[in-house]
Length: 349
Image 1 (cartoon, one colour):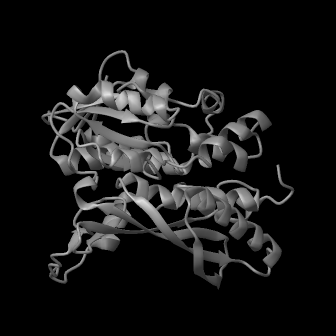
Image 2 (cartoon, rainbow, N blue to C red):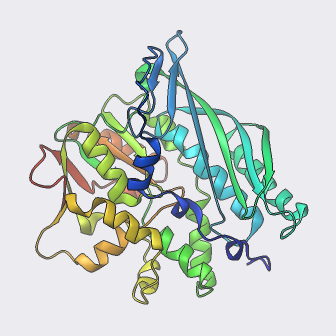
Image 3 (cartoon, rainbow, N blue to C red):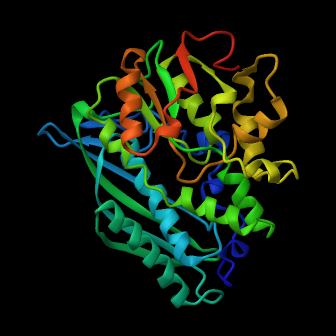
């Protein structure tokens, strides 16, 4: 691990920095009558991953931005993770990223420009892996280090995936395990073991490229990525937006096994409690579920988390075969199913 401990210079970490859902609703509330833009296919009216604009030629322009404070101590890795997390929004819409520009806030007096350069280099390396240029950016002198990207992408409009179009009966899949928030909190507390740090880095650096391949699949009805609101929060957005309920098969939800030993020591991000308070009123647990463990894992804030995907049940074999072809076979099992809403929006079984 680097001798520079970036996480000690910020009060938050990764997507755990996100403003609480209830507070965000207050911020976004407007008394100005909304103006209808017919070419805006996805905007503020839904809680989706990116905005999408109809370019008039059968293609949509996807635009997103994402930035946060350090989730790891190493500057280069921080840059890679922040970049991968921002690019994920394009993949979550079924699109192809085409260009990025950097967003950098840096406490110059605390951390020199040479360290900021390492962050940018990390971001540039991930952009290269995604096949896009880091074409520019903007920087300001701030009290805490911040880095991220604004990313543009393209998608054929009939391949566009939204988070609010799941259908009754759809199977639910997740392409990465939970536990990133727990491991990153353990690192901030300086108790994360080196082998677990390597597991954390592996997941945080992994691009969600499979999303681009899922765009053309008509049987993929809805898609989003799991980030700061945790699995429970982003699943709630899918279910509410689709006007459906969902049963989550708790024992099928993938989890980073190493995260459980830190969970046993009550190492939990502050954002976990915030997320739980925001969504728990619409969650029911069936008998036999370990509610205390579920409370810590389902709202765990993810950074560059997996894709959460609603798939028609009759396309299960085709979809799971694609995951296996992309070396994602360990996630080729449904973790839930959508259905008509019951008393609660999410039922954990």
